[in-house]
Image (cartoon, rainbow, N blue to C red; front, top):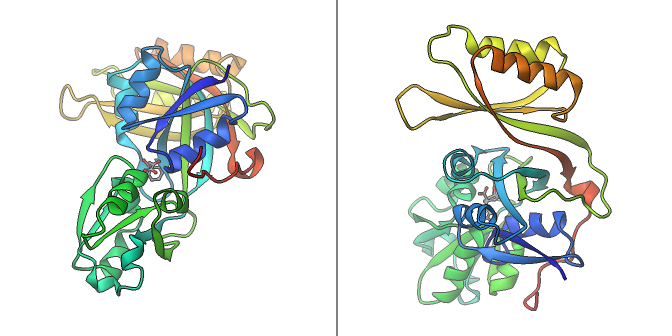
Length: 297
Ligand SMILES: O=C(O)C(=O)C[C@]1(C(=O)O)C=C[C@@H](O)C=C1
């Protein structure tokens, strides 16, 4: 039996590409969900052993929806990371393939994808309205379903191929080094063939309110043990203005002796520490390129 993997769908999203790279189709069955919360909830409820969602983009930064749902709505474990290249395409219905860009009135895509192409859109489609949808592939599907509309979608080539769109422009992101970090959540697993390029632990830290310099103490606890932190991201607690949760990624496993001491220190300073996961990190070049998604799979 192939193990079930939920991902942000529909078929043809960047997350689908990431899910297929992380969880090979020989061993895993991929199922699309309509939104990031749907993926996380399905795993949290035990309906899927694994889920894949985006967490951070090189151009636009954090995927706040993922971070906030991890904090407030689900209790799932982070089990792997994949850094995946992102090439954004401007695509339309084949009937409009020869139109000048000035004829298009609306751009559809995921907010992260639109944000990655903001400058390009201002120049290429200055008059077009923007409609945000839950994923790039959903945008492609809607554009394909409305040939009567002068619409374009932004998304991966795979979504254009799946929904029968034509590519008008490729590589439209504003900066060339565009990568998104995806995470898997759920049960522990190991990739059947790929070697990890590193190991990370993600902690969610809440500072005590009455302790000046608490964040400094937290950072020093890791620095004192020579543990590299690759990311610190704050999100509002949503309880009171000016109060935050800190997501901290450390480049060691949770049972590394230095990590054990650093976390004990942080707790000693009165911080609350939630251990979100300790997991291998994969990169796209090392994990291998799965065959393109086609209509049958
Ligand atoms: O819409 C998709 O294709 C997604 O997989 C979502 C998502 C994201 O949320 O960051 C994934 C990668 C890109 O950065 C743009 C969109």
